[in-house]
Length: 486
Image (tube, rainbow, N blue to C red):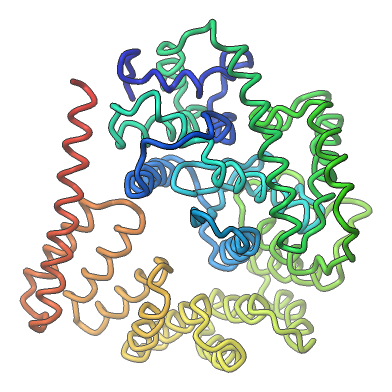
């Protein structure tokens, strides 16, 4: 259990103020994290903030269930990139991840990491409404609301900061953590900080409206999503959606946002099919979907989105014949959508038809050359067809072009191992664990790669240099962890 003390963590008061005036459920506080601090200069350097974000994500990955669907993540990341494309000063670099949770919620952590719950994706009625939430969270990051909180506690080490922030996000699974955090606060500051939080919510709304407009997305969709939240509250007998518990929604805030949104130009209606296709993936891939827009009476889903959902739902039920019946018309509709081809091939792979999958992907790669999600699926088909060299070569090129797509490294390691190249497999696994923040495991895998004695001189030196770099990072983390008890 995480331990806190009043002398070393005075800044944590900002985090706990909302807990003191609502029922204790620290998991509901995820999105509250950005709503703190001042707009002055930060004591954290960009490198420190990056490391803090890495520590935060390490704890998140260890304690939350994430939806690691490459197509859904790419869609959300592209939407976030679109929203931040016009930010010229100190662009923070937003990274979006999906939390497999049916509640309507979103939150921003340090280092530009933004989590979106699957329940929110399904609750939004349009891409614009989903974008409005993303814009709001991006605004928290760009206004550096979270980072300012550390000015009061600059002596606190980064490992402790990242762990405590994650503890608040994850405290619903461990109430003792939330109680320990509360014990380190001053109750008298609760109302003052709650007001401060609401002020920052309004600021994030205002900046978010500008981000939406700059991305050519109707700012009125932010007000529209407020209506979704209010409707959710009415249908649940007055129970607040988690997003409202962590983002106080007052009448003044709604009125201010509506008035400001009306000042923007009118926007033409947009095609919501791409967004609805991602909703279909979410509805079939998430563990618990809560409200499913595809099964609701009076659903406004497009014909293609509904067809896609039926294909995925059939495949999930192992009814591959029906899944093919639903996906084939979409493939023949001449729409340039990666996810149709990806899903068609995945249906064949899941039904143990790797050659059919390979043929589908080869055609798809002609339309979408170098697409990393298709390349990974192509490699999996080749591995099932006992062609590891082709899989290895394709993945090696993909990793060179997309080094941040960490899901490629697992398949690459499998291909290398199938070829008997264990040293390269260990190097790939090391990079996979680096992406997940598991530096000790990465160091161990590099040790195995170096010890294998099969790397050429260049790769051997490269692996040794990488291991030295990671060992240094592990040492710094250890020092900071030990210092938190002093």
